[in-house]
Image 1 (cartoon, helix red, strand yellow):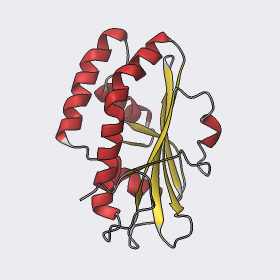
Image 2 (tube, rainbow, N blue to C red):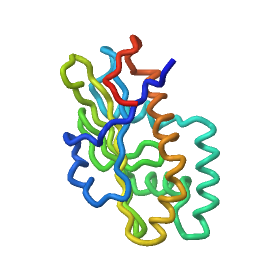
Image 3 (cartoon, rainbow, N blue to C red):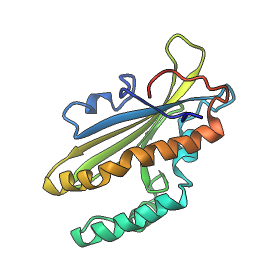
Length: 181
């Protein structure tokens, strides 16, 4: 059985589209949604982000140990900080803006700016809808570029895994796909 997750071009109808130029990373993955899936990007975001698998938590622990000496925030520190300042978030992801159609998460620091979009849109030429997850990273300095280079090998695996979790809950069951890999 093939994966319900496919690589797509970063969507031009995302509110992140103006940030693609000059990005050190801009990629996107999609799943076809079932007819009964909600028309609510935050519901999909919670399904994709809120309950990561144990292997991801283990990777995050390794990441935290590796970045602590460089003064970068650990995942626990990120969650604690977001809770303390009362900012809406899903797990470690700060909500920057949300509408029924698109939820945008992100962080900005002196090393890099990270943004993640979960967009619900119609599949071209179809009555089907899809959820598209787009990641955009702009590095500000050598530490940001090194950090991105370190996490990049696992990035696609992590995004695909989280999106596959959302597909198990909200994805089309008939194998309908809108192309891609």
